[in-house]
Image (cartoon, rainbow, N blue to C red):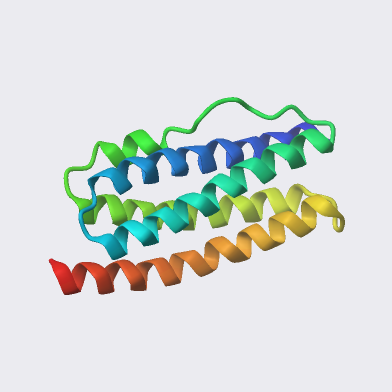
Length: 142
């Protein structure tokens, strides 16, 4: 695995771990059960992404990072739930863009390409679905 691709995959790995940490904290703070379930589902997807990225890096001769990105701290620093959820949505957009960057560095076919294509599609779908769900849940309860 070449260094630029390994770096791009490790950036995604660190970011997914940060997403898990941010969501874990939010789940503890949210009172609305439906929103907690939504956030728990998102956390589980982020956790799977991190596990799969780590395995993909390792199985292709790279060294997975052990770090967690700074995103969780940025989310925690915000004062309101609405601000935190908005940043989570922007984080999904960022992850989709960074996945596209990694995809451009990946071989044109094979397991890395296939995984990153699926990951980019998941992030794009989560951006739109997540916005709609959060707005619906917050609008009905606050």
